[in-house]
Image (cartoon, rainbow, N blue to C red; front, side, top):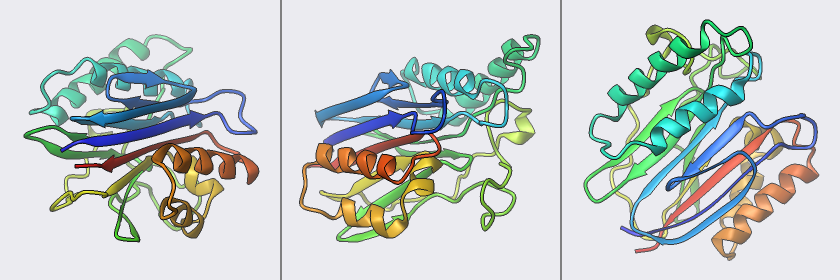
Length: 233
């Protein structure tokens, strides 16, 4: 499999800082665009620091830096649980970051592994043949309430960290387009608006740019992060 990837993370128009982070094939950023063509693998994640806690940016950055250092993804969930334990250990004694927390959603696709990782309320969608459907489920107390408390996240006890293991895409075909995003996207754009952009006859980079432009035009009250991943062959 080969992929094209176009991604951005943006502070939005209201917040003073960006607590989101994105990781796209070893490139980690808290601001701006990343565009990658003809990739033979995909290790792409969005981490959305929890705004109601202290320094959500610390947790989102910490988790993605640890993923960036991973070379073998066979036991990814076990490695991420160890990372969560380390995050809690180093932040608990420090009042400025104690209680920091983050979501994590992403896709790992290599020659022998295809794995979706999902913790929290960031999201992963798949567009195939004009249909856009949500693969992940928001891990929140009440999915019908805005800003409902998370029921799973990094930065708490091991019991607070629940990986959604019921996520499957049986086959990835050429032109499949994955959208990984923080909840800032759905707060700014409707499902209909997102789908309309993704099905346009545009280059992947132009689709990502249009999503960002439309989010900001609609106010973008939250940080917004998007990774578009398209299978090309």
